[in-house]
Image (cartoon, rainbow, N blue to C red; front, side, top):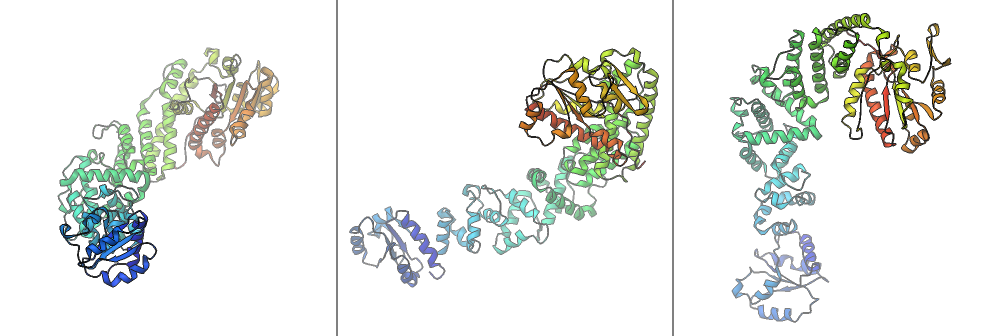
Length: 634
């Protein structure tokens, strides 16, 4: 027992006696038990009686044990090996008791709750199991998940795999995340003698062969093999990086790694990709591949850079009908955004930017319809996409963060958009005739048309400068919400000039609107309507159960507070001012596209809050629209 910790033995025995064992037989196969009997006898005092089983005294010992009371507990030891069962006079007692082995591996095996056939495994890796903390980590794993390859459980404990089932792929992912050179986990594998097992399993799983294996070469092989598999091309001829013999396993591992990276460890996955690229770029595996091939792989971020650069060059040539592997630029960008690097912040915005540029460029040959009504129909049934796509382009261009690299594309988009505005503005001005517009389509008839005869409580949200195409985008978002069950969108023609001081009064109940041009204000039936208090007074003249709030007055209010603000009110006007405030301020006018996006988000959230307060009828409208160009950098 020279290698046995007596305290560990005592702890184990006490737990067994506490569990109800009366007799425990201990045969000392090594002949070393006698050296520790005195210590053991003292340590078990008060717990169990230690009885020496001497050769030739089996019957005497048996009689003593049979005469013992049921509450007495015994450890029966022998300094000699256990005799064959048919020569053992205590065999009946042995069968209904327990045989206890005192060597350290056996104690460890039982503590780890491993089956007897894993005794040699425990004995071989006693250095690893010498730590209580490592044993605790090891014991968290389900035995059935590693019994065929028990060293994998040691690896899992070293890398601190946080799941009950031992999975070598999960272990390998944690190893790679720790670095491809001077890896701390592989150093521990060396220390606890599982490094050869690790590389053997790697070889079996991925077909990776090397006289001096290392993580960088392994990772390079998996990334390179995965890239060629995605493209449907033969893997690189350099055998160091050709793992195509186990391509299915490589693909499974890389797909799991990529998915996991998207949720938790993107930086690790991407950093490995960059490290691998630096390692293999001298091989020039991908330099001569067509864009059609690169479009199918998302292993390296360099593929997205090449694709984005290629798209820009095609758009600069106004070659907007080009196909990539059978996909238009629009479908290609959608596909790439759903792939690994396309989900990252900058790359996602870049694909959205070039997609919007492509859509604007596609519209370069558009011509105005003939006549006012035809122009209105054309715009409201899809023509608004030109303005929407331009706004999206400006927003994504600023968010993506590469203004210099895409400056040429921006100038092209600006040129095309300005040309379109010029053509359509001239035609609109030539066609506009207020006398030919149906009364129900005029903004000044809004209250009579939609509010006056409404029987249900109604909320009107007036968002300053919330033009038609922005409203269409909000409509698209609201359609995705389960709470919105019925939604329609109409248009109104505002007065001229189409500005706030004209549009806001026109949306109030009135008989007469009078323009005071020098003061830039409009009176409603002779009353001023410049601020919210004046507008609320006009609303209450038409319906006493009316009120008006600023959007900011509702922000931060609890559900109960909102309910109290709306109680007993039949008509509620809410004034929202996100876009106009930004666009009119010279210091922030460059952020108009961002303001439009923020306005959509704010209104979507406001509608949700209104719905949770049982307000089911909501109108969203605007006092006027706007035309916008982002002239910065052009």
